[in-house]
Length: 91
Image (cartoon, rainbow, N blue to C red):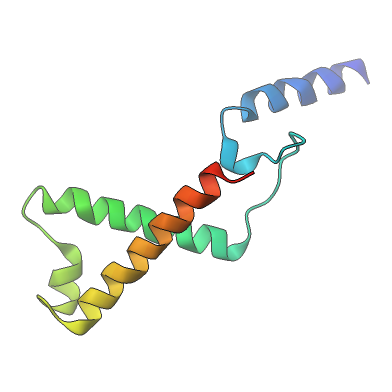
């Protein structure tokens, strides 16, 4: 039983480095489906932003330059990024 408690403590100490997964009482919580979706879309937006530095814009290649759908994708990704920031720093 002592060995199991040591393993649990080591895991808790390791998880302290991941604030999105830990609640105030330091217990691991699962992310909801919409948390995963929003964070994934924010990450995709970050990757696309990195690709634009290489003169390649994947969103514009898929949906067209300046199209309404392209703008909608940008708005959704921006909202997901704002959500990710709020989620990262909320109590």
